[in-house]
Length: 191
Image (cartoon, rainbow, N blue to C red; front, side, top):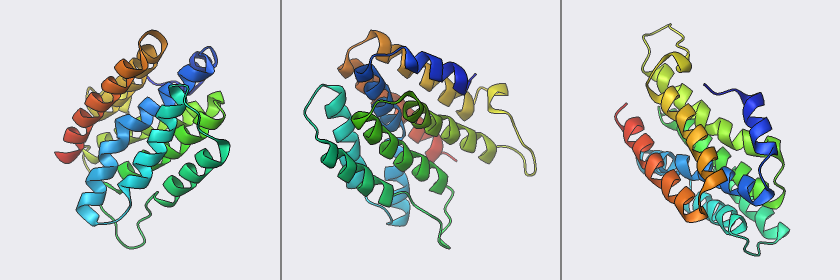
């Protein structure tokens, strides 16, 4: 079960580079959902989101990414957080989570503050919660922790990505985020 205070404590114990890597992995996990939304609606710009993620991954690898460049990437990604503006789609909240996670991950790449990292992970949890609620009967609120569905998958993903960030290589972390993100995307596509 996801407990933000516990996650914050865990993140505080990570080295700054590991914080950046974990935040990038959370955003990467959600990235396919943004692409699905963009394909369905013709709205958004996956390239801007991918560029923000690229900046976060580069920073996690110890690459030189300047503060101004990270700010530019975060700003471009922030502009791609969709709003409904009369164009509601069921994947809109997932696209919002994916774009917001990219923004947070890029901000973490500049300044690996624990709370920014937690906010990145929260986007994964919120995406799982949203899919859980979408599958619930009308007028029923379901606690994600009580299920083995999307909310449970998202909570396990955050825990798994955090553990991988602590113990594995950056390539292993990125690979895990990409493959699990595709699986979550497949789940989202089925709804």
